[in-house]
Amino acid sequence: MNMNPMKSITLKICLSTGMLLTALATAHAGEIKVISSVGVKAALEQLKPEFERITSHKLTLLLGSAVPLKRQIDAGETFDVAILTPAMIDELVKVGKVAAGSKTDVAKVGMGVTGRVGAAQPDISTTEAFKRALLEARLITHSKEGLSGTYTASVIERLGIAAQMKPKTVLETRSGHTPVAVVEGKADLGLCLISEILPIAGATFIGPFPPELQTYVVFTAGISPNAGDAQAAKAFVQFFSAPLALPILKSTGMEPG
Image 1: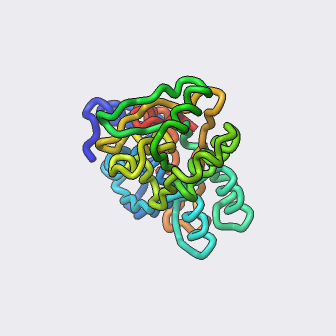
Image 2 (image 1 turned 90 degrees about the vertical axis):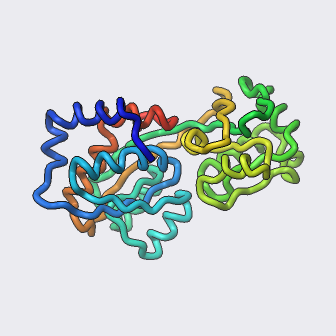
């Protein structure tokens, strides 16, 4: 994925001065394995080449839904940096899989609704309009296991339409693929993190959940106590969470953590 030239210039200018450059400068290049929720996939893919260029470190990304990734870590999957939810990182700190004191909130993102490009877009600006849009849709889809899917199911229950929606809800098992399922014609509407919608060709961002139903998923980074290069891992977390990354976060539908 090519970075917008203006964003690249902004990063270069910011990184040319100040303490961050000192933090990023290391004596040798290292490899950093990042296990991350797919919710920050678009931002990571844009930040990755610039970080590698400036630091000479190489990033290896393992992306997926947060819940299955946490299970992989519990089962012994190794990593240098994990980007999951705050609660999951806290659990990993407790069992010694994330270093105490390394926890850093790097981004947050709200829930949104996606449809196919060219298809009619329903009004979802109020709670009643949102409810009506779901009931009138032929089929909807959301993640089966991801945090966005769990939250969507709770919203449908809260709206009192769980029984009506159950037979026309397609549960997406592929990590971050709710908008893809909509593009593929498997559903009319997809409900997921806004950051998962914007990068998908053929998907359109209809809008955020109405204010009364909106929630934000926070993504938190933690460094493994067994990281191959702890300084390189720390440099990456600082890079991702620094103000200079803000244009990238914004362009991918996210906000600072």
